[in-house]
Amino acid sequence: MYGMRAHDTAPSTHFRSDRLTRINGELYFSTRENTLEGPFDNLAVAERQIQAYIERMQKLSADNSAR
Image (cartoon, rainbow, N blue to C red; front, side, top):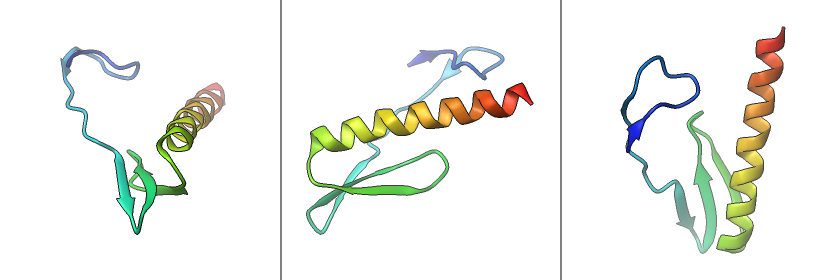
C-alpha cells in the first residue's frame, strides 16, 4: 500500500500484517504499542474490539495533542 498516514510527512510504502492470532482457541490482536489484547470468543467480537481500540488510541492522541 502506497500512501500517507495522518502523522507521516511523506508518502511511503506500508505493509499490513495479520494482527489477529489464536492462542488456546481464543482470539487476540496485537497492537503497534506491542501489546496483545484479548481474549475474544470469535472474530466478530475481536473486530469490534479492534475498532474500539483504534478509536480510544485516536482520542488519546488527540487529547495529548491539545495539551
